[in-house]
Image (cartoon, rainbow, N blue to C red; front, side, top):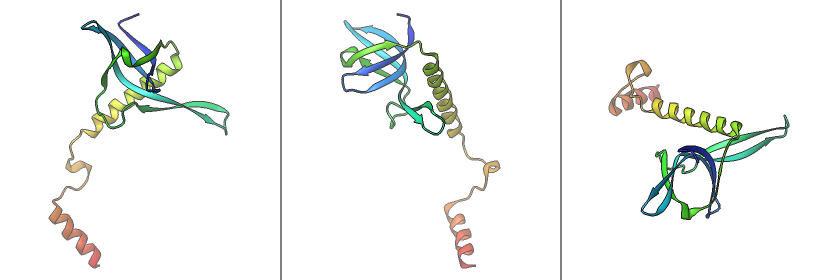
Length: 130
């Protein structure tokens, strides 16, 4: 296998994930380093008769993008050469990187009004009394 490859992974827990994978050997055990693991759900659109994919992060409450899994927890792994699935995955990763960088911007006056809680409370009380 190559150093990095795209793969579908079925865990012994029953979960199916897709990720860019690197294989590591450490202390006589094999570990998988997963980059941006996601789950795919096939969505059928009856109106147009087409199929699409719903992509979600594997762990929804984590902001990490790298995970390590011991091969003891893997039922099977299949290297993917499906260009459609890889393209959807890469687009998801690009979009999530853009969302992350835009959410880290600090507020400034060009974005709108900035005030203290006391000032905002006074303005809202004046509006309410009118």
